[in-house]
Image 1 (cartoon, helix red, strand yellow):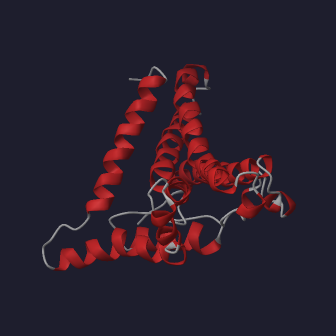
Image 2 (cartoon, rainbow, N blue to C red):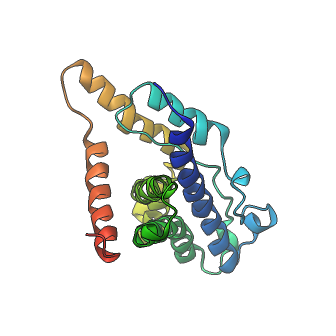
Length: 226
């Protein structure tokens, strides 16, 4: 697999921005709602080095890429939030969780709006800027859709725990320590096992790809690009 410096520049820059703003948004909203844990630890920051997890952000996606996995994903260092410190712990947990995906959708909208300014870009940089904007749109929508899966510790799982009645919320919350293992199983191991028997068990990835496509179309429509 040949990966050029150009390829890296048009993928790594939007990816780092998307992850950094996503994590900083969690910490900022938690701070505004009463918990200063992330603020004190310097995680309400636009410095990507404070958010990158060596395994989750770099090694895992690279391993999946080279293994031709049916679905690529990774993660950053989770922003620490002490939900007991929040003004209204159960409801505020929902707002803190939604802050990350909402920020990614906002970044996707900004990237799509910026397409309209491309005619103003220098001719020798226009293609590079276009590729960065296109990848920023894709990465931010994928991050938002993926993180809204209702499995803790993903943001969608925390939203579900905050909104569901307690008899349903408690068992779901208990899944959090096993969340990443569940994701790896349903997104990677299950499809790979199915392929050995000629079965297509890549159902969740297919749903995520379909939802991502719909959200991208909506963003392009709202920004006058469709």
